[in-house]
Image (cartoon, rainbow, N blue to C red; front, side):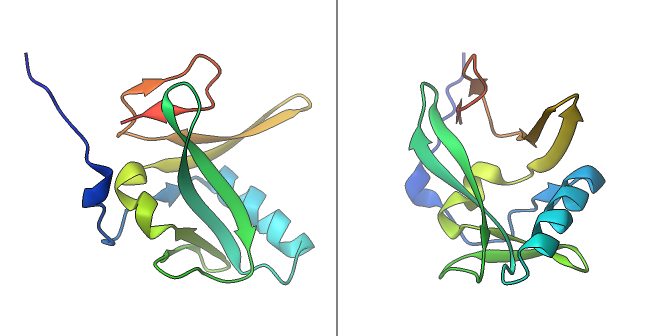
Amino acid sequence: MTIETFDPASVTTETPQVSMTDAAIKHVRKQLEKNTEMAGIRLGVKKSGCSGFKYDIEFVEAAQDGDIAIQAANDVTLYVAGDAANFVKGTEIDFSKEGLNSTIKFNNPNAKDLCGCGESFSV
C-alpha cells in the first residue's frame, strides 16, 4: 500500500493549467456582458464542507495579489488564486443546464474524494 500526501504549504504560483469548456466560457461571457465593470472570473479554494475543501468562484473587477491570469477566450479571463493553484491544477470548468437547473461543474483530477452533495472535495 502507498500513501500519498498533499501539503497545502507547498503551493506554487506556476501556471495551474485550468481550462474552461465552451459552455462555461459562454456562460461567463453572458455574465460579464451584464456586469461590464467586471474583469473576469476568479477561482479559489476554501476549507469547508465534509470532505475538506470547496471551490470559491466569483466575478471580479480586478485580479488580486498572487492571482494567476489565464486567457480562457479572447474576452474571458480566468483568475486562479495563487494559494489554490496546486488544488486545481489540471481542472476543467464546465457549465451544464438541465431544465430550470444550471450548475458549474469542476472536473478536477486532484480530487480524491467528493462529498455526497457535491459541495466539497479532498486532495
